[in-house]
Structures are given as C-alpha cells and as structure tokens.
Length: 274
Image 1 (cartoon, one colour):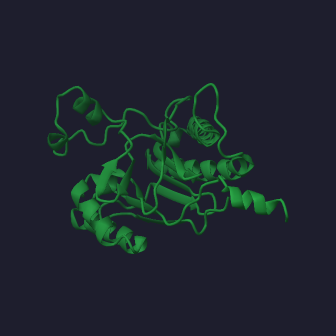
Image 2: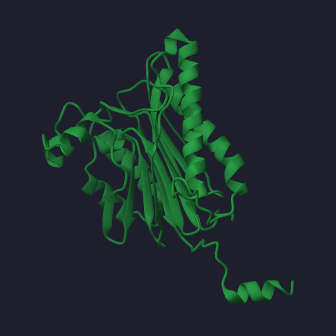
Image 3: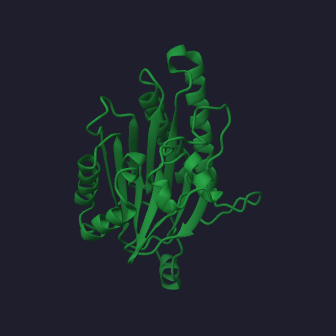
C-alpha cells in the first residue's frame, strides 16, 4: 500500500550554533511510511559518516524488503510482525557495515550512532531504536515518550538515584550505553502499536530534548499541528535559543487517513466483477 497521501512527514536537521559540523542524519520514504533518524558520534568525521551510512543502509534495505511483505503476517519465533523483523534486520546490517568501516580506517575507529526507525503499515507502526535519540507520540492532549533511552542517566533513574526532574540537571546526559557501530553485534529495542487518525509522532536527536523541555515540545507541536514544517522550524529555533550546543534533528509524522490493509466486504464483493 502506498501511504503517500495517508501520512504527512516532515524532517529538518540543523547544525546548531556551537558545533562546526552536523553529525545527525535523517531520511524518509513517504510511500512506505518509513522514517529514520541517526545522531552520530566519533572524531575526524566519524560521526557524520556513521549516521549517514546508517540512514542510507536502512532505507535502501527496507525499500527492497518491505514492498514484498504480506501485511498481517507474524514471525512465529518472536511474535513480531514481518515488518518489525525486516526493520531489525536492516539495523543489524547497518551495524555490521559501520563497524567494519570503523575497523578498516584508524581515523574512524570507535565511530557510532544512535538510531530511531519508525515504519507505518496497516494502521500500526513498528519502532526500533538504539541509543538516546527518541520517539514521542501526541494523541489528542496526551504527549508521551515511547522509546526508552539507552543511557547511563536512564539507568540511574531506573535505579532510583535520580528523579526525571533531577536528571535534567545531570552532567551525565550524553553517555549512551548502547550505540550502533561500536560492537560487531547490537540489537535494537523493537515495539509495535496501533495508530489513530490525527496522531503526531516526533523523532528527534538529543540536541532537541537536552535543551527544550517536554512540555514546551508538546505545546509547540500542538500549536503548529496544522503545519508540521512550521512545528519543526519552531522546535529547532527553541533549541538554538536555549544554547544550540548540539546538532538538532526533528522529524514529524501526522496520521491523516486510515490505511488499514483489510478491505470491507463490499470492496471484496465488487472486486469479483472487475
């Protein structure tokens, strides 16, 4: 199913006002309902190489594998949809490529990236992530983070050393505990859920969430929900006004129409006479 007119997707990335280069990378395929964001790390251009290689690899692999799927099929071993398995496989392949590229070039050794992959199908989504780049969902008036950071700070919150409010003032914000490309094998966290019309999904790097409170992000998206491009611009502007110390990437997706793969009985009946 082509989702071109079912979902509105908008993505912007900005260097910020402190960094000299942008190590974030974003990409999407509107027809597949596919959105990818990566925040690279590593010296001597390593971060931007890792993030761009990862985004390109994942989009290319999924453009090859997703159109051949029969929506609704479930992988018996994992219980996940075939779409989720394809996304997981694409992330694993990207990890191998980045790791091998780093091993082959001493200047890029240790390069890696966070990754968030979101793909819509059959009024549902599959979401995979590694690191501390995030995905949020705005549904009616409820705004929630639906990924969980792979970071030292999140582990300290989980263990009760910090409250979420105290964590915002911590100096350990950017220490990730899992990243793509650092080790020969890494597995993303994968989750699935249904979508509803008018849902808005936000993918973002920590250049946004370190500098703009969740409440301000929510209010901005709510105010500019009719224009995702303007909402993305406003979020980047807010991050830069608050210091712009890191690269800032924002991707927004709004569910505009139903895209269930199940046809009603009348549609099926009419198709017999085509």
